[in-house]
Length: 461
Image (cartoon, rainbow, N blue to C red):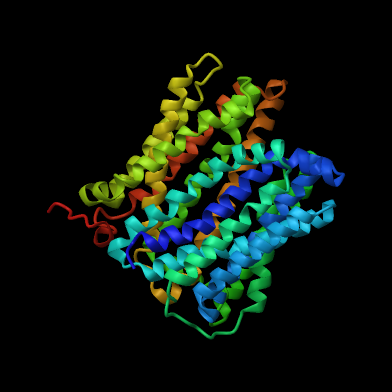
């Protein structure tokens, strides 16, 4: 199977999940009015999805090893589709929150297993192209979500934003069944139940706590307390994992220096990356007075840069190698983030879109390079834990990024004695630029030859 078919098939599921995650935000007011609640309370449905991800992502690797990655992946698509149907039929806050939780159970398996299947089915020399093709269709999900959600909600009904997952899911199931073979790797080890409970509490507590800490309906101390409980559970799991032979997440993967460095660098970078989708539309709409549609059309250009990069990445890696491209990706991302702090309502749209185009290019270059390098030296027996830990770290970083950006705005507003405005958002972008630049610190510790066998790069003597 060539290096395009597998990632494109897997990307069908990612497209469905990522589009669903963004499309619901557009329809929240309509859904709330129809089921008799308010939009603020309905945000609990968004949080319930994240909690389901956090609870079940840790056992996705164990399930794949025990029952076969392809089988579990197909099952995850079915569960996600059932959750979508349940969402469409929900008629109360409780039923909608429960349906979103069911969706999250399916989504918790789709993302890490798509990465796991890709790693186990792709020779290392083809990983760069495979990662690029995996993320290419998935880029359209978050972009297509808001306009599709707005169109369906306005001209049909909000129920259709969930019905559209059904044909997409059926296509994915058919493609996986016809074209994708099994990974050939099985492990019959028993489930570490205590570890599962601890990791579920840890990740769901941290992600849920960070997600609701800035929610007006709940006091800040509640979110902070939940996050603290999650953190304590994570510490407890660390000591638990050291005492047993087959923990649900094998922390020994961190003994591999390339993997450890990639996770740390990726986490720091994604904290800032998670804040941008929250902060930039806020600046355009609240600060500059653009409509949601105008804001979306301006932001759309960033995906163009990301897509354009995919066709240059492999030749660039062959010439420069991973280390240089990662350094350039961080440096340019930080520099372009600084420019966001100088945007005003008078800044020409063409200039804003040009900066976003380059931002999309360099961010995608960094993400794809880092994703490939992360698993370059990971043994197959540890690939399950490695992909799960990577997936959880991404969710934690993005949740922390949004919470941190909201906290920054509140602090700046309190200091200035005014409501949140453009000035506060500009200051937040400067801080996010500094956080982005910090991701370079662990990368500088990598050797110049890191990942050369995967990149096809030949370092000069």
